Length: 288
Length: 244
Image (tube, rainbow over all chains, first blue to last red; front, side, top):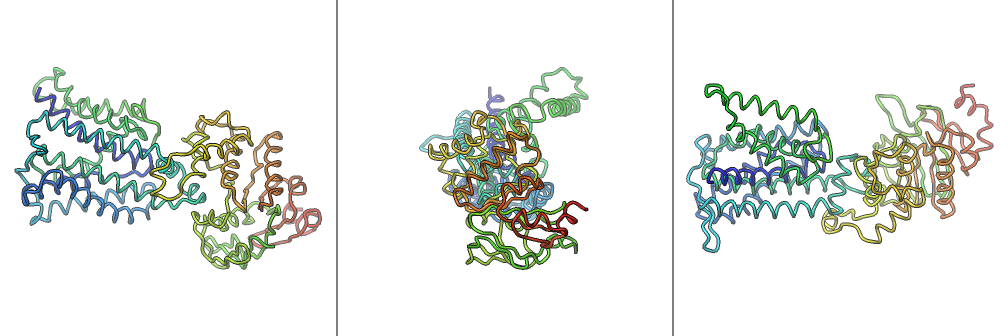
C-alpha cells in the first residue's frame, strides 16, 4: 500500500507539472524545455525556508511561486525575442543556467551536496508526514491547479493563446499585443511548476541539483506530448502513464541480470510506437 | 477627405525596392484598387499599411491627422484598419465560431481572463457568419473547410472587426463564381456603409465593376492612377501589366 501511495504522490507532482507546461506548449504553441528550472526554484525555496528559517510549508509555497514568477517574467521577456526552434533553444539555455546556479551557489543551495532534512507540512494540527495525508494534500492541490487551468483555457484569454499557437502574426493584426499574453501564461505555468517543486522537496525531504536537469524538463515535455497537447486531461493521463509504465514493467519476468536494461528498452519502444501511431498523444487535440 | 495617405513610403529587401517612394491617397468611403504585375509591391504595400512589415522610410497618414513612421501590427485596429491575407491565414485548429469570437472579445490581457464570451459577442459572430453562409458550419474546425469557405471565413473575420478601412489582398482568388458574387456583394455593402476598401485584385473585370479609383504599381513605384476605365486604357499600364 505504501508503494502505491508513493506512486500516487509522484503522479500528483508530475501531473501538476504537466498541466502547467501544457498551458505553454499545448495551448500557446511555445516549445519550452525550461520547466525543470521553475520546478527546482519551488523545491529549493521550500528546502531553504523550511530548513533555515523554520517557516511553514505553505509560506514556502508562496515564496517559491513569487521567485518563480519573478524569474520567469525576466526569462519570458528575453524569450519573446525568439520564435519556433530558437525559442526552444533559448529555454534550453535558461534551464542550463538555472541548473548551474543550483549547483554553484553553494552558500545558498549547498551545491551538489543538496539540502537534507526538509520537513513535511503541517496545517490546522494535521501532520502530513503520514504519506496518505500527504497524498490527499497533493491531490487537492492538483485539483485546484487543474480547475484554475481549465478556467484559463476556457476564457477569452485561453482562446487568444490558441490563436498565438496557430498564427501569432495573424492575431496581432486584430489588435492583440501577444507579448503580454505569452508572458502571462509563461509566468502562470512557472508558478504552477514551483508549487509542484515545493511538494517534491517536502515529500522526498531532500533536494539536490540532479533532480532539475534538462532531462527532467524533457520528461515533463514527454508527459504532455504523450498524454495530449492542448488537453488538460491529457497531462493527467500522460503523468499517469509515464509514472506507472516503468513500474509496471518491474513485474514483467525479465532475467534478473538484464531486467533494468530491458525495462528501459521496452519503455523506449512503447514511447516510439505511441508517437508513430498517436502523434497527437493519447487524447491530444494538437500536434507539434 | 483622404482617410489614408502614404508619403514617400519605401521598403527594401536586400537592396531591392519592393515599395519605392510611394505617395498615394485613399478617399474615405471609396473602393480603391491596387493593381500591377506579380512582384510589383502590392502585397508589400498592404503589409506596410498593416504593420506586418516595418517601413524603411516615408510615412503613412491616417485621417489627415495621424502621421506615422512606425506602426506595429497590434496597433492597426486602434486606427480602424483591418485586413485579409493573400494566402489565407486562419486559426486552423480552432472552430469557425472561435475564429470570429476571438476578434470581437476582450483585448486586455487581465480582462480576458475573466471573460468567456457574451451573448452579444455570439450575436456579432452569428451576424457575419450568416452573411457569408458559414453559420451552419460554426462548430467545424477551420482546417476542415474548403478553400473557398476558408477564404470567406477570413473575410468574415475582417468584417467582424467593424473597422473603417479594409485591406483586402486578392479576396476573389480561387473562388467559384457563386462565392465571388458573395464577396463582391460584401465589398459593395461595405461601401454603402461608407467604409473604405483597398482591394488588390488581378481580375480587371472586377476592378472595373467595383473600384472607384485605382493605383497601378510596377517595380514598387506608382505607374498610373485614376478612374479604372481611363487608367486601364493607358498604353504604359497595358505594357507593364499585360507585357504587351
